[in-house]
Image (tube, rainbow, N blue to C red; front, side, top):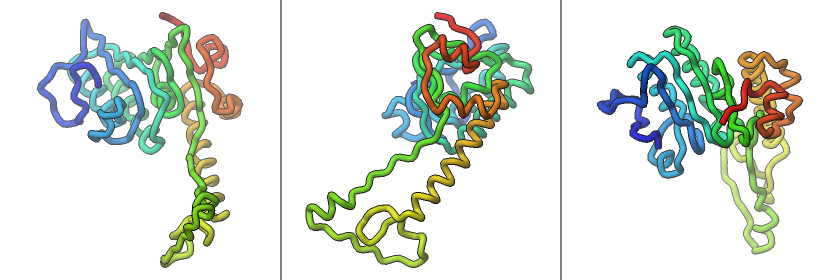
Length: 226
């Protein structure tokens, strides 16, 4: 997943990807907070693994850390704290942090990337998707069509997200929207703090993905290089 890296945060015996003071971390595929076997099977990586690798590179004497990114994003939980921890590690050691977008850097991947000293994009990369998504499926009509009636037995009025017909309760959806909006505000503030863009400018992207030249013009990346 990371060439010869083992993503477990425990001490390793393998040497890191460090050459002439430059360390490389690959951040590819789906992103999750904690590493598991499923992460490896899906070709993704974890925030705890990224933090561990950054710390190890610093410990081994890295002067610059380059993170090569090709990820459409992933889990929101943990991404802000992990990105801040990586920033703290390199700041305390006086290490330069560079991110290179070798494909896609979207959503949670951009939240991790925007804390760098320099964010460089491939000429054909896509960057952005600064937004929050929860995907649900309302199967109430399908159940009714096949003659299945859902029955819920619970304690606590908000324990079950469904109405009697199996559709989502209005109150449940409103609660999710409130949480999504709150997380969206945190995301926009995180990007603003690390890029110099205003919160309004970040939100003005409307969670769209932009190709390299547009991303550069918007201030989402600092440079375009192959």
